[in-house]
Image (cartoon, rainbow over all chains, first blue to last red; front, side, top):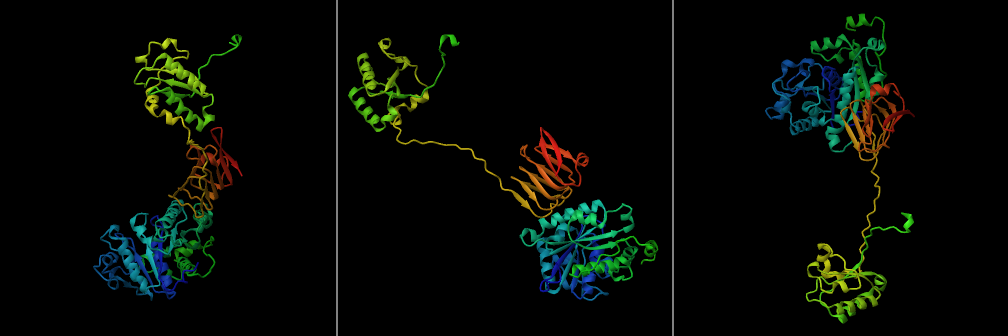
Length: 277
Length: 241
């Protein structure tokens, strides 16, 4: 199903995983940027209150004055807290608070903020914290679609399966008996060489276990770390496989069809990765 | 035993009790006949006991014999008589019918209404019929994810996979038309006839009526293939489909 069909209402997409360190924030930044590059007005919200990271990945940490919790507590207006991205048009960031914890997020407060954002934006990307507790549940509660970020290893797959169960049972759509949240699998840190050696689960293994549509496979890439450290979403690095794979994923998310790439073991891939290619 | 040509056995028979409160032969016979005429079939040759324990005034042997005679002529069979054991009349040995032991307190309590009771105008019959009520089958179309638990009171049909770390339970059978990676427990209330069917057996645990098997053992029998699990003589059998 295409996400671009709905133009009158903002689409709320949660980027979640259950497990930590699989690439949720990297993916939120890349996909949010990718959607904005396509001309849709997009906001990325950092739900990881207390462990604020999105602003670093987006390279806007020094411009954070007010945050998500300030808006919920009515200490600041949305327009004061929203940070306009300097590189990408149509892109805004709502940072998390570093000094508070997840209890600062209330259902009513989050709903109010989302409703206000929905008036202005086409896409609202919710960058979920790890785990299945309050922070993660808040991030997914109002979602229309979910991108489940998974690494090709058993514990990550198990945790993704768990979060899929929570999406089906604890989201607002589930509680209201509405159409369920659309679920998409994003496989990150994929290592074709290690898959060939049997050290890593293959794309089909993960698809078989999770049984949800795949929207992208992001190869393990030095470019990701480089991009994070530079504070620029990896999708902007059009020289890297990871950046291109994210572009493909955004295209699929918006309803375009494009074949999967970077799944095969390629010669000289080591040299390419070394050169950041 | 058979040599004697008979056997002596105990038996409990329900009889009618005619409890006399005030003796007036004509009055008793008149009202008794009226009752009998309402349901003659019920009273025909029915065994009856005459109870004089509730009589305020004594009764003579002649009056009593006349009563036995009159009751017998109405078509009832007088099988004995009863009297308050504390207040037995002097003529007790001369009576032609047997003296029966006094009844239990409960029967005596009900005695004043005996005359009404013997009229079976309304027959209330309580028929307790046991019927097997089939429990509805639960059908699930979406995958059962890790951490989720599903229970069905009847059969459970899952048209998707059961993920590792998920648990499906049913009082009846379990069908999984997908891969079974989690735990499946059929016949959880002790139905030994319950079975588990799955398209691909990769379960962590299967159980029928409390008899279980873990994945280690399953891998040696049927693995990643369609299978059914059933209980044969208290032991689980995994059979390829």
